[in-house]
Image (cartoon, rainbow, N blue to C red; front, side, top):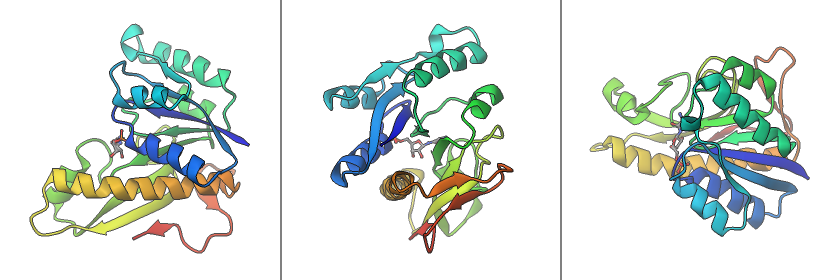
Length: 210
Ligand code: GAR
């Protein structure tokens, strides 16, 4: 069984989708811990109710980004995870942290990267007038929201869409895409190439969800 640690900052719906997928499909994965940087994250309470090991590493308790990242890494390393999955984890991580987990750290971002890195992706999409929006699961590298793409989900933008309607519709797709990637992780299909430039997913015909 491969071991997962999930990092969250808030609602945790992607974390829930991951946990539900592991359970429903009896995947050979163990969610060792859910770690939040915020005490009031709703996802932390949910994880606790589910009997998961739910931990708080509050960024506010640390004077610098580096110290927070070191504390987070100490927690993570205690679980010896194969993969660390960021699911609505809203802290920028230091290069040192990212490199420590090279090839094992994944994130979901609410846009079709490389379009719209950063925050407010739905607003950015509407402002740009794109007609397709989506989400990306990618390996995390030191450049924010630029790591090698593992899978993407795409959906049309509809007349009358607002940032909120887009976000709500996309969230469903995010859950689907992250669940798919988690299944691939269970099946041992996913790898970062030696140069750290490309994600490899063995034995699948496509890596997009519509
Ligand atoms: C999701 O839409 C996720 O893609 C986004 O935050 C939301 C978290 O929702 N992540 C980022 O913007 C990362 N920069 P959740 O807590 O319900 O999974």
